[in-house]
Image (cartoon, rainbow, N blue to C red; front, side, top):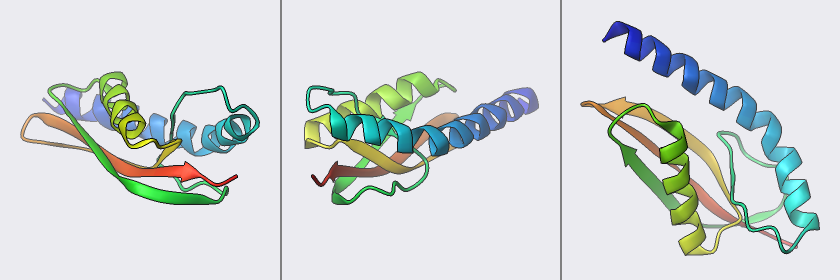
Length: 107
């Protein structure tokens, strides 16, 4: 159990570190390409101007961040968002949860 929690903490810390850096690059690419439909996920805020659309959340039964991120992207896509910012990950009672703010970039 301790190993699982330590592994989950390491994975989440890595995701947080990488997403803060890559979000700025990805939003700039997104702004330049109207055809790109990939939703950008980040644990940080972004520097681009945006409009808040809503809150998205996901729940998974195990430490599977790819699955959680896919669920967040799908929920954001349903709202018409370009990005999900300020994502938080946590576990509770054997489940892993994620939530964030869905935003639409201003042009």
